[in-house]
Image 1 (cartoon, rainbow, N blue to C red):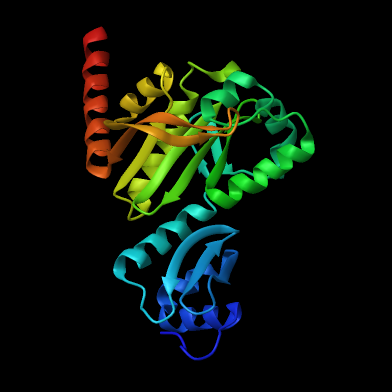
Image 2 (spheres, rainbow, N blue to C red):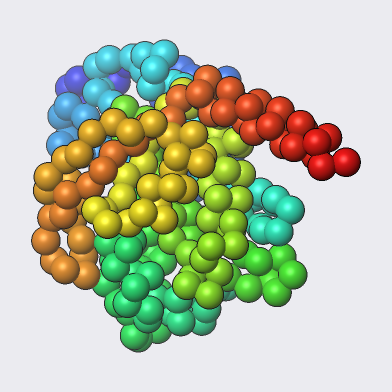
Length: 266
């Protein structure tokens, strides 16, 4: 696939990819694609808007799994969704002021495994970092046109992991469920993603109940699983997974139960 004798620059790599995988790569014209030469000889890394997506070898072809993963990344990169009460869109500097207020709350940041932020310069860096390491989306309250939290898809070697954080003033009102459910439904309906993972720290019953309501199934408990940036140490987590089949079956049961509940109330 790639020359073995000479080093390739990013533009040359991109041109090769476009020729060989033109049906897929032709879709990236509206995306910010970069190609980084990782070790000059063996591998190179594809990324969109600074988010690492795929590492491939110079002398091997993309396999079907990698191609599907690339397509998923394209579809999720510039996502804009709406639900009944919310707008979910890629996080950016237009919410910087509200994001700073959100990030100064200790309880909110502690539950998410993040550190408290008090300076706007640090808030800007956080937004840059969140865009780099995952697919980070703002949760916007439609009525108030206000940023109230984040939902994130983390690319993993085995699939995607979802993370979420909501302002304390909007908890226990169904906003986190609505945001996560909207994003999960899109991912399962419009990409080749077959399973989504999630986790939470111990003593977070609200997060546990949310994941069960979304249809996630408990997987295991892992020590030193997640680096808590506020506490500056690795913390244990309870881990969960949700398959596409389980998600849609769970939605069917919820719809049926809701239908009969309304019928019985009449």
